[in-house]
View 1 (cartoon, rainbow, N blue to C red):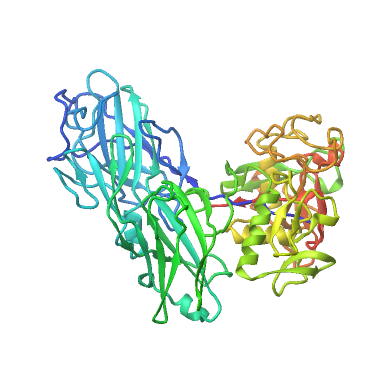
View 2: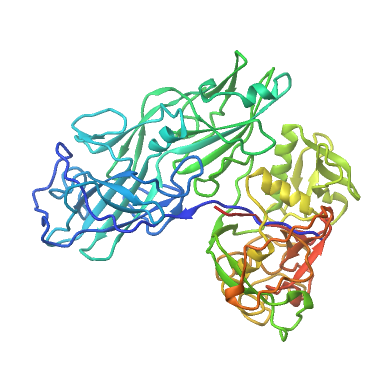
Length: 615
């Protein structure tokens, strides 16, 4: 058997410290006459976080993790300006604003914690009595009655003016990444109010490659000014009362050129997009000027763009035109590195950094000698896919590679019925299950596409090699987890044989005692572990990134803990680790500490994988 790494997911917690106060601005929205206690009462403080999505209208979000910057950043930037309104609970803008609490300006002062402080002036104070609502947005804009200038607040109706033009570079693009937050019914307290900001706009990534008749160098050298989006809104207004967005005029705008996402592509571009419902704007385009020749690609009318979501398109520019593939759709905070095509993967779970005792005690039933206990520290949070990668998801990946013209089928490695990437016939990805168990995916010989066996769409992919698991993760910009990350996530803070206790329990895992009929089961149908991960015990083994090392290094004390271990040998053909047990195995092989391995080109009906990301 082989090992898989777990699916990456991308985003960091951005809780700020004290958002202490505000600057009283003139010319703002209308204000209520109730006085604010100027310097004599309790100052309001805030904790600022960022979610993947804007909060629903009129609803506060509590607690969040995420990224702010559009090009992969994972923290606030020093000096980021935020505007805050305070109003009576249940009141509406602009009439319900409490005097002196109209569009107060704060700036980020600590980029590691997200702490904010007033940008001059006095702190924002709670009123003498009554609860309040807070409305906040980024980036701060001055207030002017009737203003329609981008980046300003219209004081007449308390809307924020947005334009996605002028995204010429990363710095400019980040200042257009509009965020919104609302906290309701806050009582006067010394406890900080949680403001969870959400992305108002959508993000689009274009992973571009040169097709037939186009020189790779010409695509690689494309400037952002040579790529133009058209036929969609260029402006919008944000209703600060409830976070609702109204699209404005249709126009053209350029993206930002970003680091190329993967070796399979020649250039990567990112753009902020005004959210759009499907079939609202007809004839939307992406236009590329390559070596003086204009090539136009069409964005399907049925493609919607939702605020807070990230859409990653594979694009091929050839002499006969532009091929625009099916986008990956992920929460903005799921994958902020601009990679991926053709499939939306399920939820991720944040696995907090920490130290744990890896391996098993000598008296644990089923224990093997390769499970020596040793201390390990994981220095960074890891985001792991909540579920094992499914047949449907893996088939979509293969079809994306087939559409790119880089997927072959036939003899690869030891198999005669395998998919493999062009030029890598010694590294099979996955086998056609048609003549095997029929629980996996199969190839249509008529058109070369892949699909799950009917009824097994949501079952974990099987007959996938370590090469195939890694190729999937690489394609979407994720990675396989290390063996240490996998066991740490599986244990979820426990020290027992399983994450739920010392005795096997069929409520948590598919294994030989409850596996009837034989075979894989749909992912997520058993109970999750304490950190919300499903099928960490049983169903299918999961490949990890590590090469097999039968003897763990010594780390007998917590002070001597190994930091972020990952074993990679000089032998590329070395066995790879897989973990977790499988549907036909005894309970003891499903333990948190159990280890197994196989050569990276092997495939069977009992090994799959999940993916991970380290921000």
